[in-house]
Image (cartoon, rainbow, N blue to C red; front, side):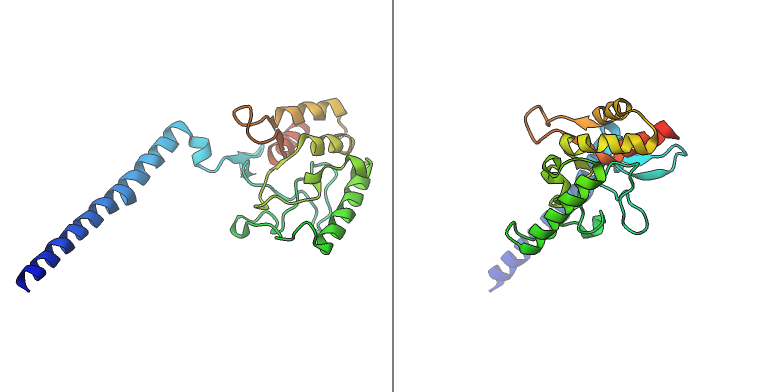
Length: 202
């Protein structure tokens, strides 16, 4: 009995010491080291990839999409429009609609969106790409396809009194290729693109 109690005490003390050591290493040292490395080598990304307007105020993040619509939810013609978001780009409520491809409500909504977007951008419904009428899994995606950006160029240019070529140059400047040359698809960051438009016409 005495030996069992001694073994229990020894094992308990060993477990407590291990817990304390790993708490310090993984709960204090590791986070501090990672934070230091991030701040030293990737300060912009570590601080949220924040974007600032012409007055220096934070206007968003290049990692999270935004709505460019009026108080009634109507898209503003002078801005490139992002992908849809179930939760209005709220990071606290990230997620999609979870509707499947055979859901009748989803099918009806996509057809209506395709018609509305085609009319808004002055193109045929066949030119409206899939990402224009669907949401990303997170509902926070700030990027659209180059094809979706392309059909919006003329509308944005007309609304801002710019030439289509001026707008295309900004689109190209805010387009990223595949990561490492082979992962993902080329994409246009709508948030940085619209900020660049505002700065150009300020």
